[in-house]
Structure formats: structure tokens, C-alpha cells
Image (cartoon, rainbow, N blue to C red; front, side, top):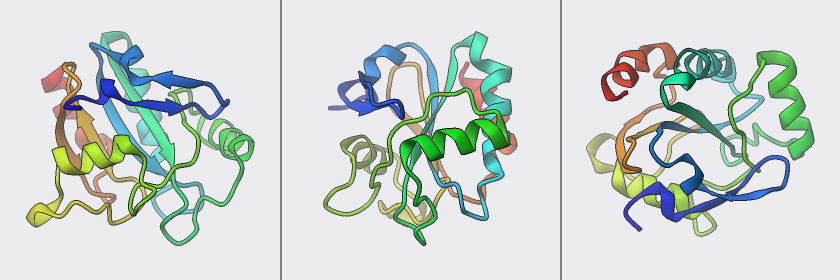
Length: 159
């Protein structure tokens, strides 16, 4: 399993899909939360998605409740919150774990393929972002405080 295409995930509407359906696209995969200080980044993520979706770029949002219990809602509540407050149209998935023994296999792969500062693998907080190339391989990890707008140049470079 050396690309994200080897994994499946359940969309927020309950449909299980293969990430192979995103083959050939540049992806920004993000662990999200609705009650976090970084939650306003949803707006920037949606802006990037809208700006580059026609060029083969997609944001994938994975809600996670592992950091300060900042994503306590149900899938319906999360979906409604994101649509109502930020106009999110990019794909959202069901709530997952990103760390620990129950970490989603996709995030196990991403953490190994694109480690953090000093080679750390654990995700430190909500809104950690992974840029994944059109070949399905992780290119780079961005910490929570990296704004979506500051990733724009990297997205343009890899498109």
C-alpha cells in the first residue's frame, strides 16, 4: 500500500468509497473539527477547492474527535454545520481516529509517508493537512497552523 488509492473510506452520507475514485487528482487530505480554534480554516479549504477543482484538485475532509473532543457531533450534524457555516462542497467523510490503535489506515499511511517535524508520525492537532500528488503518493505534511491560503503555491506547482 504505497498510494492513497489502496484505501477505502466512508463518506459522511454513509457510502463507502475507494479513494481510487480520486485517481489522477491532486488531493489535500485534512483531519477536521467543528469546535476548534482552527475551524475557520474550512473557509480557506473551500476556497482552494473552488479555485482548483476544475484543474484536478480536491480537498478531502476527515472529521476527528481525538483532540479536545472538538468534533462531538453526528455525521448529519457535522455535514449541516460545514454546509451552513462555510459552504463546504468538498467531500467529507465519517468521523475517524487519526492516531492510536484505531487510526484509520489512510492516516496510518499518510503519517508514515509524510512524517512531521523531526520525523514524528503522530498528528498533533486538528487541521493537519497532507498534500497528495496525482500519483497517489504523499508529497508534504502541513501543521494545523498552516493556513490553506499559504498552501496555494504548492498546489499550483503540483497541478
